[in-house]
Length: 161
Image (cartoon, rainbow, N blue to C red; front, side, top):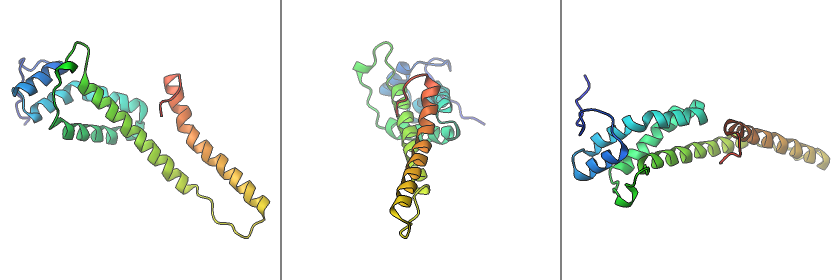
């Protein structure tokens, strides 16, 4: 059975500024305010990740919210960021999602490069070595370029990598 939640407006969805002010005033605890923000932005962040990260979206989603919770416990509400249209929490969530997604992409490229490492062929003539190196370089370049081309194609413009 779900536990009842404390809200300021009778359970209706709130905006980020209301949650930040309630947390600052002590009307909502860290856990309650975190839950409000998760309810407010969870689907939006997951949708963003599903478009970009596909298979890893759920893992990255968990990483993003874990990182945010750790940060949320000591979050300082700055009045200069509580202007109409500003959403510092959503901005933090999307930046964290993008950084985590890119980091995982770089890890996969590094792992793929390790897998494609050229075997040590010390007894072959130099011309064979050069051909092997060139072929290896082209294979590695194609493997790295494939996700970049996909990212560019999804957005219809240059990829931010």
